[in-house]
Length: 448
Figure (cartoon, rainbow, N blue to C red):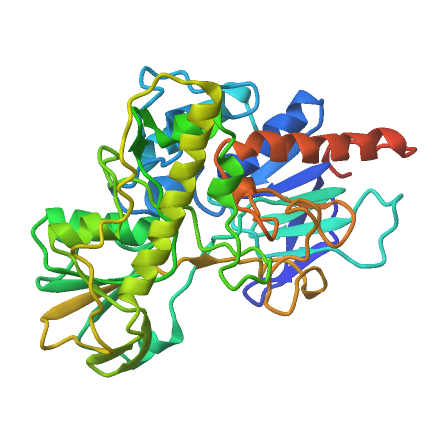
């Protein structure tokens, strides 16, 4: 045991921290981190996964109760393991996905330390290509030194709430979508949902079905059909290679720079029917403009409901046009269907103000997304906003530092569930090449 790691105790001396060596440390035991560990195992490389809470934590405990896997059960894949349930075309709930992941970890005998938060990671800038130790991961119980470090906490770890929330009347309850569980968990009264991505529209739909009065503050998003011409949208994505369209959207300003407003909204929370602003407005959801400021119990809005819905309609028709064109070219005998798009008959602009008290709005749910949380890493591997300096969503700013499940800057593809296989393969092959190309290889286990 190396006793170089010391910390103060209760004043009666120093606590000796255990220091061990593992070739690769992986931070985060979601599908991405476990996928990397399995890919390394396939190539004969040791790793340890450290997880602040439980395997599959976000899916099991940090999303609303009715959230289902939007990409479908077939997408629940890990290295060497495909979905083996009896409903491949279904959409499992989040806790079920977490159970699949835990079963996989147990079957593969991956080394995962649950309830082990990372305090910080040291990666000195002066290390050389020949150093065995390039990272020191500080845990509550000791330090793990490693040649490589994989940060598998994704790009969506920290709930994002706009600063204007602090100006809202304190009498109004405010929760982020990460803390919302079900309609019964909210105070009585009307609910304002802010954001029209997947979470915003599905939560608004669920609240309405539960009998709540719902207001939905719109924002830029894409909308796709759930089913079209007799097949699910995911089938058409496979047939016509539409995946890149799904995860990558062009900028609206014509600059050519890609933007990532989120995955297209396709289906209601039970994944049985289509979902968009038109269907929500038709059911009775009150659509209001984008929230721009707050003055106690009054929200100042951009009067843009119709414009946002029209833009979503264009995204809907772009994909149905591609499907129609593909069907004609390949001569598929499938039913005809009118691409109805976003039904605009129930949609109108709301105005520039929303009076919370007058509308009996007692709760605001902020479905405003997440941001990266890489505070455990040193400043020199992060940009000015605290986001990782990365290449292709995988390679970090220093040798041996990798990311898994991080958007690559112009695509959400790396964060997909099944992307853990390709992410793991790329990282594992780089680790393997690094291992076999350098002289002298460190032993694994506790350092003497």
